[in-house]
Image 1: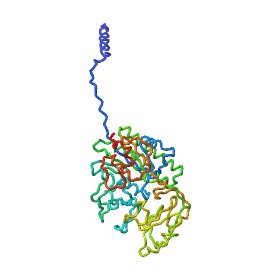
Image 2 (image 1 turned 180 degrees about the horizontal axis):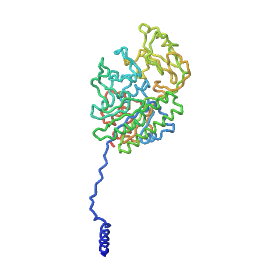
Image 3 (image 1 turned 90 degrees about the vertical axis):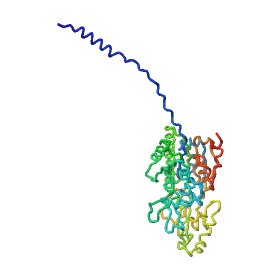
Image 4 (image 1 turned 45 degrees about the vertical axis):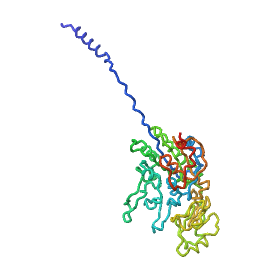
Length: 429
C-alpha cells in the first residue's frame, strides 16, 4: 500500500506558502487636489412684505445671525409702497416716478386700451430704466434670477404688434425662472444653490431670490396675527438652508436681504367709499386700495375737482401736479391726473363693503413706520457694524453695483453713502 505521508507533506508546504503575505509594494503618495478658491457671489434676496420690526419677534435666528455678522436697518421704501414699483427701484436705483413702473396697475396714453398688470412682460412698459442684471450682462458679468418682478422681461426689446410672443432684441439674465407660486420655497433655494454649484465658467456672479409667503400671510391675516409670525419663521428657515448650502460647497457670498415694503393692519370698518365723496359719473378708477388713481371723464374735470379736492376724513386727494414733493411722485405720464392717499390703516374702495373683513395692506405713506422694510447685508465684503440709520431704498442698487464690480451709476436717485463705512473694499482692506 502506497504511503500518503509524502502527499500530506506537500499539502502542508502549499498551505504554508498560500498563507504567507504578499511582498509589500511601494506606494507613491497622491497629493490631495487643491480646494477651489471660489470668488464671492452676490445674492439679492427679496422677502416680500417683511416689515422691519418682524425681525424682533424672536422667530428669525438665521436672519438675526446674518444681521449680527453684518449690518441691518429699517429701510424706507419708495412711494408708492407697492410691490412692483419698489422691486424695480431696488434694482434700478430710480424712484418709481422715474423708473416707469409707477404702480402695480397702470395705464399709458401711448397704449390706449391696455393696462399694465403684475403679469405684463411686454418690454415697452419696462424700457424706461435698466435693471442691474441687464447692466451686469452688458459688462460681461453673468447673472441668474430665481424670480424678481421684471426679470423675465427682455428689457430694451420690442414686442411685435401682431405677434405678442415675438420679442425682438432686449436683454434678460443668462438664467432666469418665470414666477410661479407653485414653486415652493425649498425649490427656490435649491435652484439658487444649483446655479452657485456650477463650474466657474458658467457660474453666475449676481443672483436674485424671491419669497412671497410673508406678504401673502400679511394680506390675508394682518401683520399682527400669529400665522403671519409663523410665516416669518418659515422664511427664516429657508434663509438658513441657503446659508448652509453655500457653506457646504465653500461658496462665499455677499447676501443682501431686503423687503419691498412693510404691512399695516386693515379692516372693512376703516374704509372710504369713493362714490360717497365724488360722483362716479365724473371719474374712472384705475387703481384703488391704500390709494386711488383716478382718470376724469373728459369734460367732467371741474365737477370732479369740486367734490374730490375738498377735505375728507381719513383720505387726502390731489391733482397729480400737487402731490407733495416729499413723495417724489407725480411727473411720470403713467400717473393718473388725480390721486388720493388713505390714512395708514384705512382703505379707499369703490363702494362701501357689505361684509366684515380684516387683513393687511401696503401702499401708504412711505414714511409710515408700518411701511418700513427689512434690510440686511452680510458677507466677506461687509464689515460687521450692527444697526445702520434708516435710508431710502434707492441706495440699494448703488451698493449692489459696488459688490458686483460695476462702476457707479450715472443719474441715479440714490448712492452708496449709507454703506461707505462698512464696505470693506471701500476701506482698502
